[in-house]
Picture 1 (cartoon, helix red, strand yellow):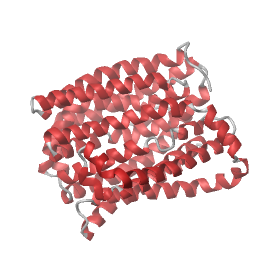
Picture 2 (tube, rainbow, N blue to C red):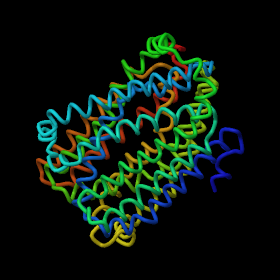
Picture 3 (cartoon, helix red, strand yellow):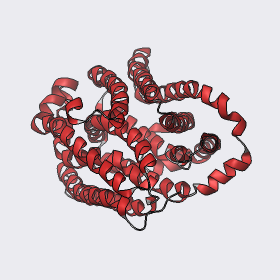
Picture 4 (cartoon, rainbow, N blue to C red):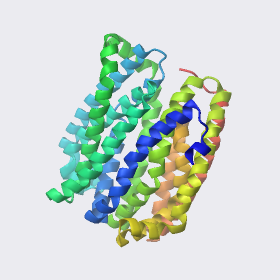
Length: 425
């Protein structure tokens, strides 16, 4: 089906390479999810979701987003300095995170109503560093068009995380098993990507210098100034949503919400993430030809919309039944949540890969306003649901309001490449 919808171009072949490996990685997760969901309770998943969102919130800014600039320099000698800069920043950022939570961790966790994960906070700095390694080298491999190696790393990460969850449960560490496996999985992909990167590092390490790294820091300062706050807002919204659901409706509701989003985001993890990798590399080649970039945006919209209809349609029709069948009858409620959230998650699936257009066109600063609006809409929606003491009202408000915002974003992404405000690096 994918071959019929997507033409056999170099772009499509590269997407297919990444999709193949990512699909295998997600298939491992899907096949083992029924086992894992029966070993761990919704409350365990709720606890895991809090750690997950906290880890992503912290680590998303751990390189000041300089990893995104790895694709942009024309010369590999400059790009290798961007890689070095990104890893250098992440190393010291991880140390700062460790010291911060060691000195004032309990107070910080109390503010977000997450005291339960206090004993797992030492793992946070480990996750942050290896997340940074993975993200940075990921863009180097994309620059080199090593898409098969990217896929291999994801398969290994998925295997370690899923199988690790089961193994850790039988060892006897039930409550924090999901968190431990999550961290182990991140460490594994970080190490694998470093091994893939080793040959290029040995080839180009002569070009790395503090002088050039400083030049790259200044040249791509927009990633620190604009993309870092934007990325922080994107993950912070998940942390706020999870925290408010937990506060108003309990750990079980947070677990149901997490599971529903996890399943509905699988298409984004398989197809959307793969498309982003190749789309970013491709429009960076096409830019500054705005017409060509706009045409590429239009193609991706059409392809992903066609793919989304059967994927999300199945959940819309039989979500509760399918969740109960796959994960156990106690997860029936997560299927109801999924039906409500389909509009916003479908649009997110279509838009996520195309967000790279704001990076190439240096328009990340406008995207910050959208990020702020998204957080406000989600927060208001959950406050309304909390006032009426109904999770369904909260989710319907959230899904409806954010869907309207995402439709505007779709329009903006399409016309952005032709804007007179666009600048080249």
